[in-house]
Image 1 (cartoon, rainbow, N blue to C red):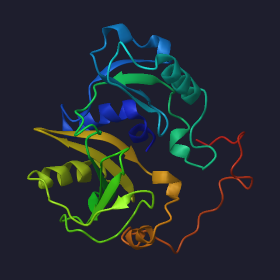
Image 2: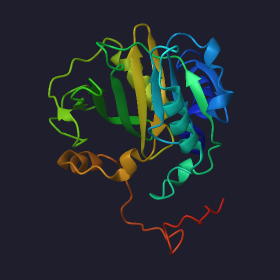
Image 3: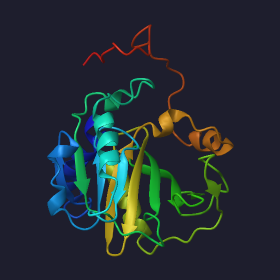
Length: 247
């Protein structure tokens, strides 16, 4: 789980499981923004931190972008251990790095649509299809066959109830199910580009389990969890900033 949560280590594991061509190309990486060779970057690229959620910054013109602000945000990101406040332990051991990678083609001024496949033990349970990000962000929920389920999962997105399966639907399923084998629950994020499927990231605790929609309740019933067992607390003072996971 730690390796698949680490955005840089994930790329190596995807290559191992699926072969070449399924990840965005890493252009530069280092322990801080200063280690990145921005001068030799292409015109457009994306800046990210590898160990957290949300530190993603699009550079559309390398000669004109808020470099100081992006540097500040990335330095702040690598200065903290993500996930402690919410108990998302899979983030804690990840080595903190920043990196730049190729920018995937935008669609009508927005990032390419997300195919977020929610899976269990190598089986897609439902798809969360997200598009028009940052511009009245929209969401469609379908079952494994691409049939619209009429549910809202993310309460902050506009629900749409029409979906057309892409021609390579089976290939998308195969990628998601290959990557999700062995995990009771994981979300596999894919981008479906012309002639190419790209694995974006894998998430084991989306929004730290804090979705509030009615759809969240219904979709959660699809996950085959053993609800008869309750594990003992890792720490009676959970959460606490000084706690360390007992490896």
